[in-house]
Length: 223
Image 1: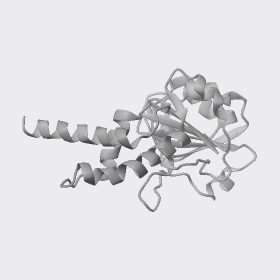
Image 2: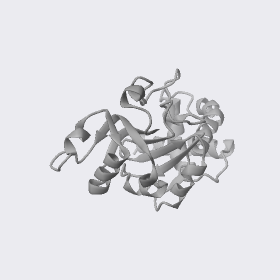
Image 3: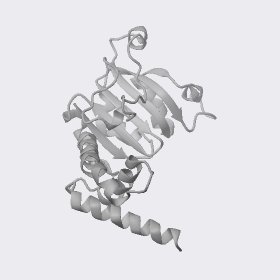
């Protein structure tokens, strides 16, 4: 089980080329779709839908032609020997949340959501793309992309380590504050650990950053 996080604006042409998708014998189930450039060109109408089932040739043709921006979408690559009826009769991938309200894409371990898929591409809010497979080997070419890439599972595990170490520190730094704890942890993450996968998650660093944030907020409140 593996995933690669790509700092990408939702454009898939380079990702599919790096993966060698032109050689795949598959179809694509696309769910939760929102994309730009869905009008004014031949064949564009389908991209205004929320759910699609396309051949690999159809997908690569349109992305090769337009390289439209995927704002949201989950693209599941499924061996071509399965029919559309077989595919849609099973679980349809979605941006679901667990019992704690956390996105399924923040899990410590990934596998494609659709039980027949051998690979999944998730575009999130025109900002990042996560590519998921049952093992890392087919994903390794993505590390050759020009954009920022990192191991998505490792990044999620580091986020959860930050929560485990950082959440107990918040009340000591903000005893009278009612701000959501996870919101503060997200700010700490972006200040200390975002795009810094080699930096250890350290309680002393977290505490210092929380106190620095508190001091900055006090100064801003009092001018």
